[in-house]
Length: 82
Image (cartoon, rainbow, N blue to C red; front, side):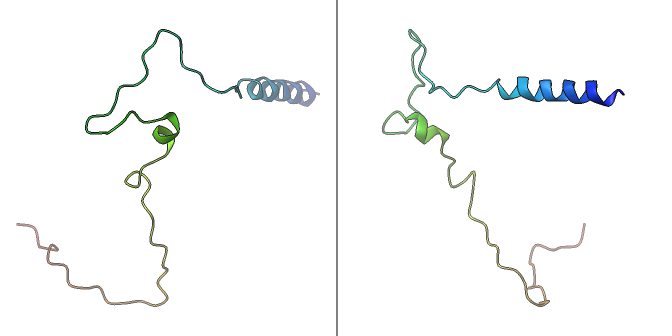
């Protein structure tokens, strides 16, 4: 008996949350200066350039899987505690 009101409530919450997003293009607010030029950059970055992650923030990954066990190479920094 209580299942129908819960289902109705869940559907209304999902419907309300789906209407929260805006699909309009962002425009700068009048009277507000745009972001300043980054130190050392030759020009002011465009919004598309600011949204693109840098190589340092998303490096390429080596996804080569190991097919068999291999002995580890000697690690010169693997020292016993002093």
